[in-house]
Amino acid sequence: MVELTWYGHSTVWIEDSGTRLLTDPLLRDRLAHLRRRRGPVPRLRDAPDAVLVSHLHADHLDFASLRLLPAHTPLVVPAGAGRLVRRALGPAVPCVELAVGERTTIGQLTVTAVPAAHDPGRGPWSRHRAPAVGYLISGRSSTWFAGDTGLFEEMAKLGPVDLALVPVGGWGPTLGAGHLDPADAAEAVRRAAAAHAVPIHFGTFWPVGCERLRPGLFLPPGDAFAHHATTVAPGTVVHVLDPGGSLTVHRS
Image (cartoon, rainbow, N blue to C red; front, side, top):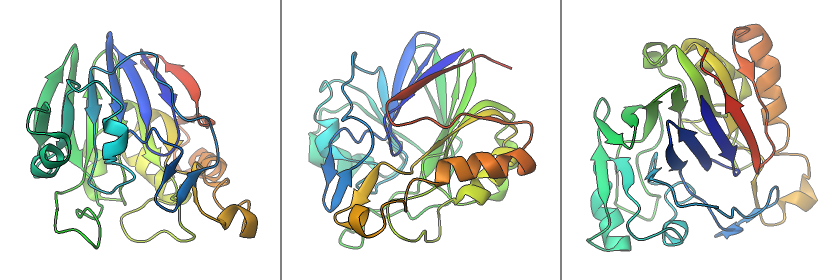
């Protein structure tokens, strides 16, 4: 059994086997030109046992959010990201770097880095680079946190999984390479043979002014993903949550 709360964007609280994980924490109401337009600002009841960071982009590796967590909270990051993390948070921060195929134990869980097809950089203004990853979390249930990714062939080797947390959109008016739209996300959960899926990375943060010009732009991807999955991945039960919504999934 796995219990989760989706706090919006790619921030998910995961509890399995008594161990608590937090993915790509974005715990603020604004980030640069982005504003939180759906769901409350996360207020965590407890500290996570570890944080999983999928890649270097500022909406996934947000140092201001990480500073809101206890200083001793272990971070699991892509191989090559440790230098940037320690420079920002201090040399004493507990930081485990994982390359694809490497794993670490957190409480009662095994966390394995898996591939992701996404830009490895911090941004166009930074020289920091580290290959993006997803994570396969194994406990009483198996959970695939995809991070941010496009389709890749190795997805078929990930499953079957009990739960897939899969990105289905973005925060800009278009999606570039290295992202999943709703149709591609349905194909992703088919390849991973996911029993259950929760769409993430959509509808939470909006560029300033966009809600006035195109007020419905970022809302449809979750429902569109569920629609595509009914034909592309009929064996997957899709749960479309609102930011702040929770779910319990029992092992299939």
